Length: 353
View 1 (cartoon, rainbow, N blue to C red):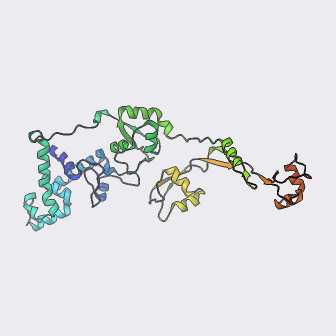
View 2 (view 1 turned 90 degrees about the horizontal axis):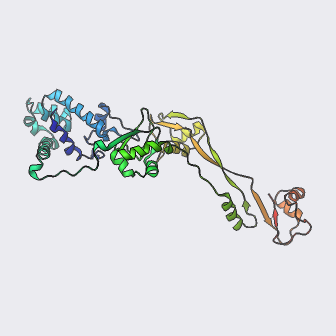
View 3 (view 1 turned 135 degrees about the vertical axis):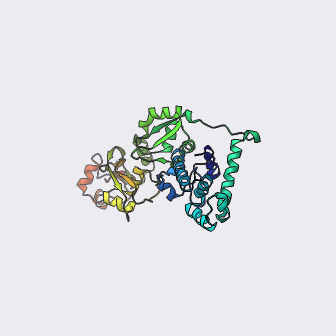
């Protein structure tokens, strides 16, 4: 294959791996979904291998080699890459059986008529750029300065950024295969590339990415604030943090036709938000064949028995207060053992729960 074919990516995408055409073609080599799938490029909710420079370049080379095998002419192969073999075969028939690009050019779609000349021009300028004072911009980072880590589980890019200070935009720029700011858990594992020192730091702290954070709640501050703002029938309770616990046995659910997050959550006795949290879903949209992790760690919060008070009003007596709050005088007395029930004062606090 001619070395100059590497310049095809310049006229296809301007060397931007995440560019998308109006027709839906993606990546450096502008693969349509069907063509990419035919050459082994996968696409789902989280990844699109058409945007992976290495995988897409390999697929493009195989595609161009296949086209050359059909037409035995590199210009014809380039035209077929742009317009599709079907349009090339039509042009051959309309030209009376000619088998060169220049022979069938008048019968090609207008875009393809300019495609090969554009490639020739780009290849010339990039090959002889010095003679025309075209100076390449310096690379931000060279391949030899990169390293790779394969993740043990699904993790958001923001969490990586928070942990080691690696900017999300830089993560995405060096790993354009990911459609979202999230690296999914797959088998084999998903990998990310980055500068040597950054990946080295991430390797040493990777386990922290999957640790469940524990939030400490200062109950004394909460209770003090509640006491400060309490009215005559306000409740005072304690809020405590319970250690994270497994809600359900971990399970992988494969989405089938007609299912929704709601139906799946009911099947496993969890909430939609649980499933979204376990799978880092930014919305409730799911697709057939998608694998969802069911089960994980959650924080539980529970309240200790509430303490309720009542402020004595004019005309109140002990029996009336007890009846008003669904208690017997004996029950109310047990809650207020230090109070003289015969000498209640207006404004005095009586515990009623």
